Image (cartoon, rainbow, N blue to C red):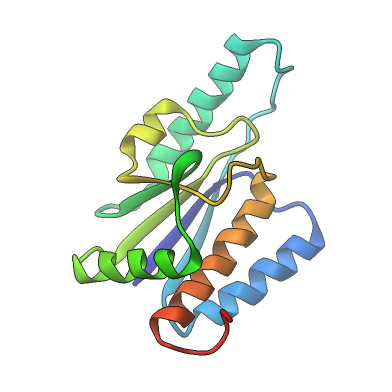
Length: 159
């Protein structure tokens, strides 16, 4: 399986870099994984809804240009489908059975994702109704991907 994590912004904290590096190393045994970062636009005050929308549109353009060809796109969205870890593993397994071996997970910036990006997605995935920092969400996604592969192979980790 080829997985692309398409993310708005760069990791800023050393501990997040270390966590990403560790999970990318662990995932090597299960999939080819690539992290692609696009520019994060400066976010105006939340009261300026027109300017926030412009940021979403600009980041959305960056993201849409970087989606690998023939990818099944999964957008992380608080309003998306929620799974347990076991259900997520079954979902991933079923994608493979359907011949969808090239996946692209998209993590938006501080303002979320543009409507055009959400429309491009084959699925919207939520990890919680909570709002998480997008940099931390990247690590959570990597951990859940690793857990899903361990579950799919019946390997010990998720208990």
